[in-house]
Amino acid sequence: MDGQTLHACAKRLALELPFTEHCWPFGPEYDVFKVGGKIFMIILEQHGRQIVNLKADPQKSLLNQQIYPSIKPGYHMNKKHWISVNPGDDITESLLAELVNDSWHRVVDGLPKREQKRLRPG
Image (cartoon, rainbow, N blue to C red):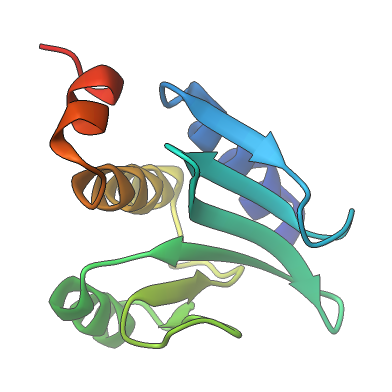
């Protein structure tokens, strides 16, 4: 997946998730996506290269970094809890959808139970 497709696909996938807020708290060059007031994805460009930062389970993150060369520790983020997805042939839409979905759920899991029930009814 090339960089423009990576950004467009990640943005579309994030906005399909319920209660997602798209904002620019760090300036117009950073697309930030939140749920429950907490960031679950940041889309940015660094040195002309498109990057998508996502929250990730530390164990799953390490495994994904071994399997997929385009997945690295989070750029300018906590390396244990964030990953950076870079453009590459190993990144598919289904993999990106799984990573974005996991990030959203990871953030919701960290919210108070009452907020979790509001964001994930049923």
